[in-house]
Length: 269
Image (cartoon, helix red, strand yellow):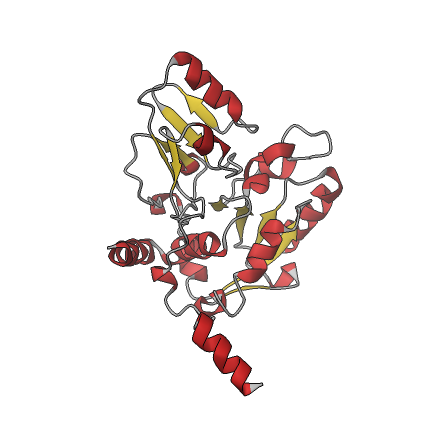
């Protein structure tokens, strides 16, 4: 038994990721997109926009891609490789909905708008944040990734970030899924049970925009129609690193985001 464990350790290394701010995902991971409209004709631009089943791609002054709608399926990059390329940058979270829209004029870096964060959030939750996860009709993909965020590999608990069973013991909720009509009342009840001050996090494309199910009669988005999330975590599903880096930037301010940016740049070099 011991010999087997030593062989696994030698082959795969330690499961524990020691420095989360230096993680580099594999090249196959579809993260932040890089856009370029050069070479697009009006006809091809229209074809590209119609290719996306959720309408995430638009073309006006230039190409734009809404990560809050994007399924990260990669079909656009396959069909139009000269115009769209997905990098392996997992730092995608934003405190504003507008921050999820990528344009071709951007520098390709993660810009977390800390001025959009309510001051009470870092003041109250900088060192400890307990969340109640609500699967509002999700397909269990984002739910599995959120579970992984607390496992031995990523261990977000080292930063004081954990999930709790009771909303009365929580500081906020993390919502996954498009919010089906059957879950609308339960989601509202869970939110009301969380004591003030509290925060709201939308995790995954389905929670942010409804995704493929946005126009379905089985979906009830009234909860998000009247409430603005404090953090949007895109992905389909959202990667544990996307969630962890986003939450850390939300509760710990600009210095942690700057450190992640610096360490990732050094790692890539």
